[in-house]
Length: 424
Ligand code: AMO
Image 1 (tube, rainbow, N blue to C red):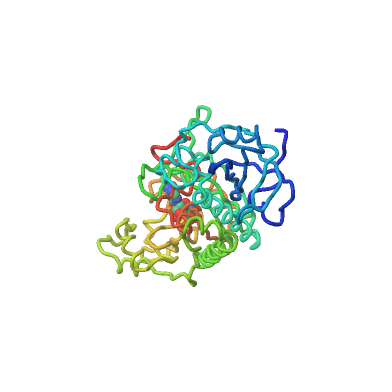
Image 2 (cartoon, rainbow, N blue to C red; image 1 turned 120 degrees about the horizontal axis):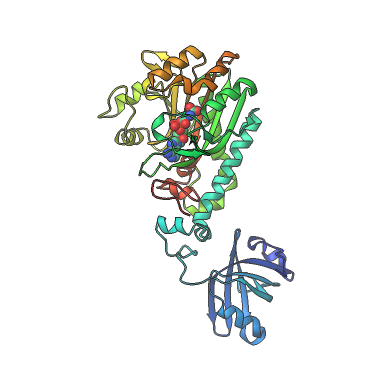
């Protein structure tokens, strides 16, 4: 390219009148009015108007008149004050990449597209301000999570996603051929984060987690982004406090930074009411109909609970031990030191105090039908001095789904994976 961009669209305002600028973006609208041609060029930040005049702009006019909408162009020229708005009178009008019509969706957002069409044409869909806004918010939240946890002395870690044994129960594992050996895609960094907090004290990871579940719901995908935390010398109450503060911090930061994005989405930023109520499993059980005591709640019961508690964050604590994985500590009476973070009827996170003795872990593995031999690499760490610890896993996509009030989790994932979708 011969010309370099000097300004984003949002920066082209009255303060630049009389100055030369170069912008680059996609042609959103073309409006011929007699001998005038008004173009709007959109980039990541917004739109700029470009005005061409048939009598004065000759060749440029011809190029601009012919170029299809959504082509990528570079425009250089002088900023002028037009009828009530700033516009560029071009000296250069270069078509860098021409769009071929018909396009799969209308990036102006005027004709909404169905979700499969949006997902099949992801980069094009991101030109729609209300869709792009979701991913700006997600980026703010991912940054806020790191800021918050680093501020609390956490060490960010990166653990393998190719693993040799299950961590969250055997049913939902993707098996892969690991150079002739059997391996799996990690369902969570659970065992690694526990091991690492035995040396690094407090660790976190933001990474993909894989679940081979054939779920066709608006909140399940086969690959999601998990925010995992593990803290030494802590129990489930400590890490619930941490999670509540983190979620409140994310909402606050996003409200401050993403006002334009929430406006584009047509929703208010969440302002969490604190403290988040902590309902026990027993209390929640009394509030719903049709649940079986000791089992997980099914969707109808979660919906009922969501209606009763309302559109807010809350915890369900002290779950029956049998509903939770082997690494969760029991607290007597068949219950466990565990929690789920909910928003209305949707589960956003789960966690608990961990079993921290080797014998207890072996017993619980066997109870859940798992072979302690497969976990020897993990069990041996417990012979080396492991502090009591607790932690949680937060589904980043579900948090963003709630913050942006989207119906379907796939709307907040750039390239979602589900039982049907593996492309693009
Ligand atoms: P769990 O299995 O409950 O716990 O997962 C933690 C959180 O991850 C999100 N999540 C999902 N999001 C989208 N699609 C899915 N299929 C999916 N499955 C889970 C949810 C859920 O609350 N190791 C424990 C956490 C811990 O104890 O530290 C774990 O993985 O938001």
